[in-house]
Amino acid sequence: MRIRVVSSREEIFTLNPNERLVHLAFRPSNKDIFGLIETCPKVEVIQLPKSYMATVSKSIEMFLQMQRIQLLEGDVWGHRKDINEYFAIPSSVIEKIKEMKNEGKAAEEIEKKVSRESKLNPAMVAYILNKETAA
Image 1 (cartoon, helix red, strand yellow):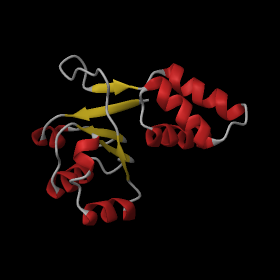
Image 2 (cartoon, helix red, strand yellow):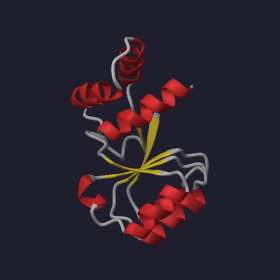
Image 3 (tube, rainbow, N blue to C red):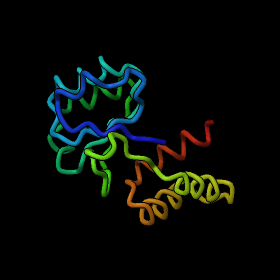
Image 4 (cartoon, rainbow, N blue to C red):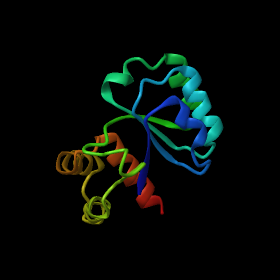
């Protein structure tokens, strides 16, 4: 599973239309969010750093909810955009989530433990959990 890291407004319009997970590494305006959704109609998750989450307008939050797009808080720890435009979620993390799910662990317990071990946000772990169990 890969998260596309976008570091500038200009980059939004060069994205692959099939992107599903996008991390915005800049403070997006409403126009940027609309541009992203226009460019990538299949987007399922938009992730923002904690400091930028507080600046997202309520109208955009409601719009994303209506479009069934999750707005998650989180970071891509240690990622260098100059080396790779994608942040890969290690397959070991996904396997750990599947393993804990098969053991019958509660979703909250899985989110807490995996996010602590992998530095992924609990909401992203929940997304992976739901995505992987549906597949």
